[in-house]
Amino acid sequence: MIFETLKVAREEAVLFVEIAAPPMNLLGPELVRDLVTLIQRAEADDAFQVLVFKSADPDYFISHVDVTRVKEYRQEAEKLPGEASLALLFRHLSASRLVTIAQIEGRARGAGSEFVLACDMRFAARESAIFSQMEPAFGLIPGGGAAQYLARLMGRGRALEVMLSAEDYDAELAERYGWINRAMPADAISDFVRSLARRIARFPAAGHVVVKERVNAIALAPAEDFRRDFDLFGESMRSPEAQGRIRAAMERGFQTRDAEMTLARMLGDLAR
Image (cartoon, rainbow, N blue to C red):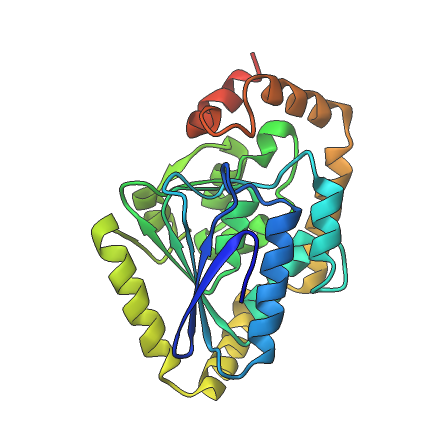
């Protein structure tokens, strides 16, 4: 499998997928297109059972959506769920027969966080992983399903804290809150995830399907709830306040690699 923004290696029934979309792994149309194609191909081939996602960039897993190319990435997302919605694309991944594991080193903010939430399991490097749902800093609701995932994973109070604060959360606090499965030392995470993925892939695929189906019946919100969140995100994106805040953030370096190393601080200053 050859892609523009993904590097894929196969080990038996496991596909190891490395995200490589310089300069900072923004979720733009190229990355969305490649993710859609990867998922389609892997789902169509019974030889594949597990997908492991990691980043080629030590500082950014997936930074967030590219706010300058919203229409383009929505068009690419439409090719899998049949609707121009990242939320329904991510929900499709959660409902897929494939077992998905995110190995997170670097920043996963906004839709980057929502992508890892859509994966079945999440393991993060203690030294480098950072998580954030920063959309409310712009007056937006997270549009990719964060409200649905986080409320179920960590409860009402913590989900509201995470989203309304638009703060950065390190791996240890994310583990305590339930955002991720485990925070692990950086020098141990790759071996652990590889071993886990290969172990799961050795078990019957039919078992994976029925276990995911029954867990999702309890823990995965209906498609309509994801659709509603994405629609609300789109509506609020068009508001003058949101557009003004995005412009102000862009003037301060939003969507540039160096400025986003301390994005939470920048967003806090926008209110001043």
